[in-house]
Length: 328
Image 1 (spheres, rainbow, N blue to C red):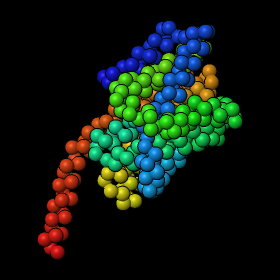
Image 2 (cartoon, helix red, strand yellow):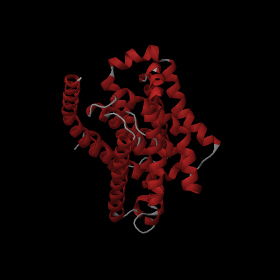
Image 3 (cartoon, rainbow, N blue to C red):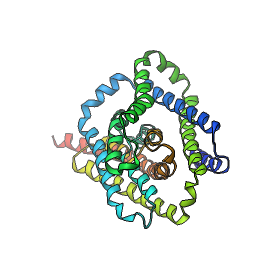
């Protein structure tokens, strides 16, 4: 089992056995907010402004990724409406809809694209653009599709901007001084990335335990939710792959579109859920957590296969070029 997956499961188990409550819950929540802010500061520090601007040239690629993230996924979520309350509780279906409006991820998309020998600079830009756009689009879509369960207000948008957008912009502004430090301490900062997410998970699940929400979710519903998440992921992977081919993108760009267009961000989605759903965020983040683990496992297998095929594709292309030269 992947150590990060084990850590997530261990965090959920810890919240079930020793949920934070009272003053401890407040302290843990504040620590999680600070850690997430620092995480997005690091995201801003890592992205070169020149890379971000150069990425705008590949507007067709980013348009396809954005359409998959904020159009295809919400449509898939709406198509599953008939499953509630038969297979899913209303709260779990709310979580499924929220999963479908969360922006794409940066880190795992870039890592998968790199493994599969895709267009890594485009993946960095696509994930970053999606995260920035999601700070506005995700609350709007959540309010529209989910309705009264979402605490949507100007204050909610301000909270998201304060916790996510402002640290990112600060990282961009200070990148000249922070980038060298980040380059020298990548391993330590990677632990911070994952630790931030674990803190948010522990906080949300602790709230659910203290309020007795988890008693309403049966093992059968969890299995149904896992199967539905797998179906959504499969449809997203198939649709992005088919669309990228039909639109004539080169292989490296197709890899980027598939991974960036089918992945969802746990790091961005969890703090947004905490702002938009408050104390009821526990069950809402469960579909996102399950989907995140599925996307890591399934996409890692796909990336490995594409990586092994990449030399064959390059060799075949070279042979075609040689044949053309001979004929010429």
